[in-house]
Image (cartoon, rainbow, N blue to C red; front, side):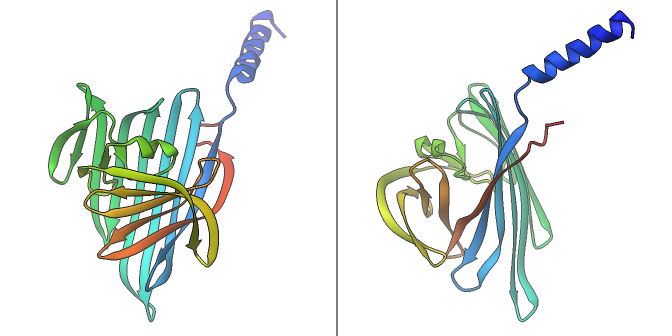
Length: 221
């Protein structure tokens, strides 16, 4: 084997050993409607490399009665973070066949969001309405992951409460998030979001953690 090839193999091996392991954490939630029961799933896949975090979310819900689908919504969303700063956001939500697209990016000292209502400039500290980490508790402004609408929020709580979720009672840290909606998020002692609740058409929809696992990262080899 020639010396250049040996040096090339040595360089590739050194790069592979130096690279951080490509792995992500996947959190899968049951979506529970107070009338129709389980209506789908929601997943957050979180990949961290140094100060960079990539969050990929997938939503799949369908409301069926007697075999007839009354409502269907699917969404795929992506958040790119550098430290605690949201750098970019992309979302495609399809509701009963109608797509809605939102794009956001950090620029000019704020966060520009393009959606159905045009482009608006949000504060740099805006957080998508996806409580994938305890960072959401620092938010003063929140962006709808579906429409891109930005609203001021007031967040309170943190006390440990017994919470009944999906037939099980757990002691969790409960936080209220109040804007035009009254929402809740529950974290365990390690900071894992065990469940969250949001309102849709006057109904409280629960997202309850069913499974967490380590998976190969999308950018991994």
